[in-house]
Length: 471
Image (cartoon, rainbow, N blue to C red; front, side, top):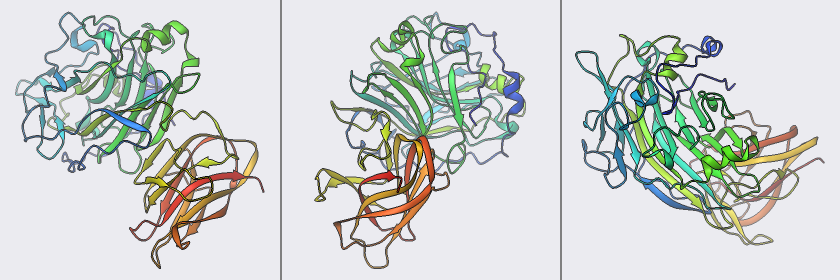
C-alpha cells in the first residue's frame, strides 16, 4: 500500500523546519540487509521511441571512464546552495556538491555514477547535475514522457541511513529566483531514502506550507520496485504529462507499472497555471545525504556513524519523448472493456514492435512478441456487470514446438493472472484467428496488462486487437 510520508522541503523552505509524520515512520518495514555496491553494465543504447513518440532529448552517458558528464547537456551544481538561494539546498541535506570525478563521473561502460563520499573529518561530498535545457513541456494536445533507467545506491540497513538519490524536474522560473518554490512546480520522478526498497513519485505545487499539494510533503505515492529490489538492479522510472484530453494529467511508472497519478481537476486554476503555463522544466539527478526526508523516515538525524560512504547511484540513460500531433500512446481516456481495443494503442510495452496487418480492417498489429514481453492498457472500464471472457485476435508463424501463454493481469504486470490462453502456430504471422479465454469475473476500471510467457526465446505470437465480454 502507498503510505503518505514526510517529504523534503524543496528550495523555498528554510532548513530546520521539518514536517515529520511519526505515524508513517513507525509503520515502515525495516530495510533489507546491506548489499554489494557494484552495478551491472548499461544496456547498449537509449531505447527507440515507442510508436507514436519522437525523441526530444537524451543522454546515454557514453564517454571515457573518469570524465564528467557532457557540458553541452548538463550543468554541474556545486557547494551547498544556489547563489542567493536557501542554505543546504533548502532541504537540510548535509553534503557539499562538487565537480570532482570521485563524486560525479562516467564509468566508461555507458553509465553515470554519482557517489557520496566522506572525508577523514566526517564531511560528506556528492554530485548533482541539471540539464541546460529548461523547456521540457508537451505542446497543447500532446504528451511528454521523462524517463531514466538507473540503479539506486546498492546499500541497505544502517549503512544506508541518509542516502537520498533522486531523479526529478523543476519549473524553469526557479532558475535565477530560487524563492518561488513550490508554485513553479516540481515532479519527482524517482526518490528513495535510507536504502528502503521503494520508489516515491511526488508532485510539489501551490503554496508552502499546506495548499493543494499538502506542502511540504507534496502529493506522493510509493511502491516497491517490481522484480528485483530498487537497490539490487536497474529499473526504468518515468513521468508522463498528458495534454491530449480535455483534462490534463500526470502519471508516474516504474518498469511500466503505474503507481501514482494526479489530474488537473484536483487543483484550482491558478495553481495549475502557475506550474504548467511557464516555459517548461529542467531535469536533475543527485544523491543527497541527510535532510528532511531521510531524517523524517528514520525519526532521527542522518547520516550516522554507521552510514557507509562510496556507494553510487548508477544512471544508464535519461530520455525525453513527446507525441506528435494526433499520435502517441497516452491519453486515451477511459476505454470500454467491451469495445475493440487495438493492440498497438498501448501506454507501455517491452520487447515488442508493430507492423502493417493484412487482417480485416487493416492498420497495424503488435509483432515480435516473445517470452517476458509486456503490453499495458490504461483505464479500461468493465462497468458493474462482470466481464467473464477475454477474446484476442492473434496470429503466429512460429516454428513447430514453439508456443506460449497470453496472460491477462490487472493493475500490475506481476499480479496473478485473471485468465490466460495458449497459442502456437496459426499457419503464418498474418494468419489471424480469434481465441477466447475465460477470466475471473471483473468489474470496475483497471490498467490491463498483457504478459507473455514461453519456454522458448523465439517470438511466438502477433496481436491485432482484443476485447472483453459477458457471454
